[in-house]
Structures are given as structure tokens and as C-alpha cells.
Amino acid sequence: AQLLMAGTAGGSAMAWQDFIGRTLPPARRGFFFGLRESMAGLAGLAASLLLIWYLTGRGDSPGDYLLPLTTGALLYFASWYVLTLVREPEWPGEPVPKGSWRTYYRETFRILVDDKNFRAYILARCLLAVTMIFNVALFASYAKTDFGISPALVAGVFSAVNLFGRTISGPVAGRIADRVGFKAPLLAGVTMMAVALVIGLSLKFMGAFALAGFIAIYFLYGAQGSVIWVATFNLQLEFSRVEDRPRYIALSSTLSAPVFLVAAASSGWLVDRFHYRPVMAAALVVAVAVWLTVFFTFRDPRKARLQRV
Image (cartoon, rainbow, N blue to C red):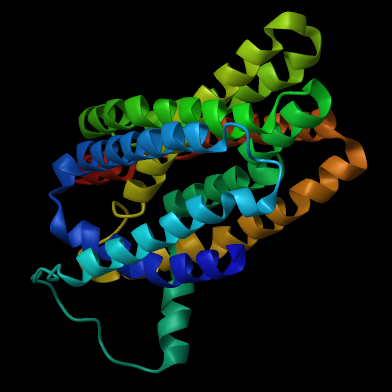
């Protein structure tokens, strides 16, 4: 099921991102996507509250999750129908010259040679994907196995806190991005991830405050996920002309996706092999490397373009 969801999302991501880039004015993209994250977070928060109520006295059997999963699938189908009602806007621009597939791919990967700033962005994206060796799902397992926190509390309260963080951080990140560019929210999101991992490494020594530590972690992970998503999604739309934008989007997704897949797929094995805290520490080291890469080697493409003009 996870592979099917990832495959369909990857197949439609480039077209959807280019479609959004053509529809929204550049000066308002950040706020729009921040608002989108907020609305999605509010919907998720409402759903998590219902999940808390539904899982009270349940949650020990896989069958207890059948109704929530079925409801989610039906909502996905409803969103697909709404998307079919949207018309793609016309956008003036020069059509891409026709040629062989070999020529097309050669010119596409040539971007990595010619665009130094885009290479820095790809490096940051790939390193960001490596941090998935310790993701928020492993904090749920950590809470249950090492601290004895109930599955209902993890699935309900922790999820609600995570979505609350996502809800309030999206519009703030979008407003900042529209004013100062998308580099600042990206750095802020990576900083929140690093802080969450530091708290995770400290849980062992927090005693009675461990539950509060987990709540802080889930809030920070919800916030950083929203902030980083707003930044990375929009940055891909800023590097090139409209005609070349699909190539940049495709390169960004294609080059970082295998790293994400390997990191996420190996996360459980790494925890089984080395336990939670060593893998958490490794993810923290990578998060710091992401921050340093973005801060020292990457320039906001919108600002760089204005300086060239």
C-alpha cells in the first residue's frame, strides 16, 4: 500500500507542481501554500480528535483501524473528483523544441552541470532525505517500547499535537517566504528538526517529563514538516523559465526520491540493529549538515535572479 501511494504521488507530482506554478502569482505562493498546510492541518486535527474518540478502548487489533483507513480512502477519491473539475490555465511562452528522447534527457541533466545553485539545492534535498533514517513514526515506536506509553495516546494525542504544529506553522512560514524568500523558512524547518532530535536524545534523562518531551517532539516535527514542505515545494518553481520548469521539478524529485526511499526503508532495520538513540544521533548529524549546506552554499533563486537583473 505504501509503495502504491508513493508511486502514484511521484507520477503526478511534476504535473501538479507545474500546474500550481502556472496558476498562482509568484509573490503570493508562499502564503497560499502556508494556508493550504494550515487548512490541511485543521482537517487532520479534527480527524485525529475523532480518532482519539474511536480508539478509546480499542487499538490493539489491526481490525480496529479498518474504518479509519476506509474513510481516508474515500476522501482521497473525493479529492480526485474535485481535481478533475479544474481547468489548466493558459500560459504564454515558447514551446520546447521537438527532438529525440536522448537529446531531451541530455539537455535535462545538463542543468546539473550549468546551474551551481540548483546543484546545492539538490544536495540539500538529498541530505534532507537521509534524515528519514529516524522519522516521526519511529518516535511512536520508541514511546511505546521504551517508555510504555499507550498506543491510543500515541495514535491520538501525539497525532493531534503533530497536526497542531503543522496548522499554525504553515501560514507563518508562507508569509515569511513571500517577504524574504524561501531560504529562511527552509533553515527554520531544519533547525526545528534538529531541536526535536536533541530532545529525543535527552528523553532517557527526563524522567517524569518524558511525556512532555514527546509532545514537544511531535509539535516540532509537525511544524518543521509544514515549513520545509512550503519552502522546498516553492523553491523548485523559482529556478527557471516557465518552459523549463518541468525539467527542474523532475530532476529534484527524481534525484532525491531514491535517497528518501533507501533512508525510510532502512530506518526500521537500523533501529533493530543499533537501537533508537544511535540512529537518532546519526539523523541529527545529517540535519546539521543540511543546515550548513543551505546556509553556506545555497542562494535563494528569486533574490539571485533579481541581483542579476
